[in-house]
Image (cartoon, rainbow, N blue to C red; front, side):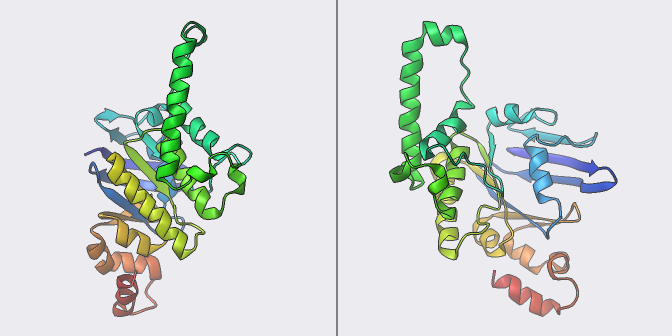
Length: 266
């Protein structure tokens, strides 16, 4: 497994946001995490990426290393990149500069090497710019490289967030609601780009998404959370038929047959 999470719990005062969650993600897999609002999905992402630290007794193993107590920048350097539901782009900087900032998180220079090896540093900078331009071309933003990122459309900003995460050269890409606020056309564009990146770079992808259709059509395995607990896991076909998932999303007001019909249409 590329990622193995065991017995993950996170409490905020008297509130347990994530309770004893375990999951495993295979290399090359697209793994979906779904659940009603407040079910702990984003908290789980924050635990895996090091933003939050879990309660004692948990373990997070990525690519053979126990990263449970690592800092976010260490986890990022090790190959875990993520996007956020609320986009974090530098609006006043160009599209290309946004990618370069993402990539520079990987580069370690000191003053001596920058002075003594200035030619080498400049050559590396040129190479990186070329690499980032190739990435922009791959995600369809090359024509906007010099445009301020704040002038991009909503769909283009989502693509830029993907590109900046990819600039970190990750093995695992974690996407927090990549389709949020997008039109159906832009949803298709973003998802097609995600799958193209996965195939081109051999990525493993974890997606949090409220739009069930996105998860059911994109993911190979789906994990369902409710009130911070994992209540189901399996293929999209199995999840659509799971009684616990039906209750978590729509309660008991509707007949199971009606709910299953809605899930199948997703």
